[in-house]
Length: 56
Image (cartoon, rainbow, N blue to C red):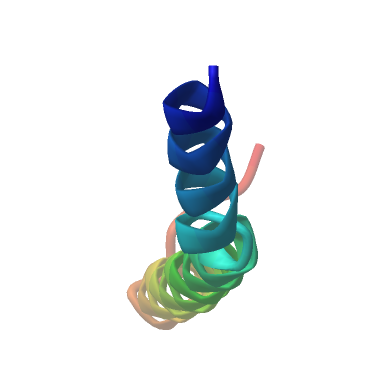
């Protein structure tokens, strides 16, 4: 039983801050994806306006 508790404690200690790092990396990647999508949307809109696309 002592070994199981020791393994459990090592597991908890090893992965305690892992969640925060994963969440931080996820949100950083998601924010860059959103910024890139917004820039592509602006480019497409400006391109359509500059070529005389009829928005009907």
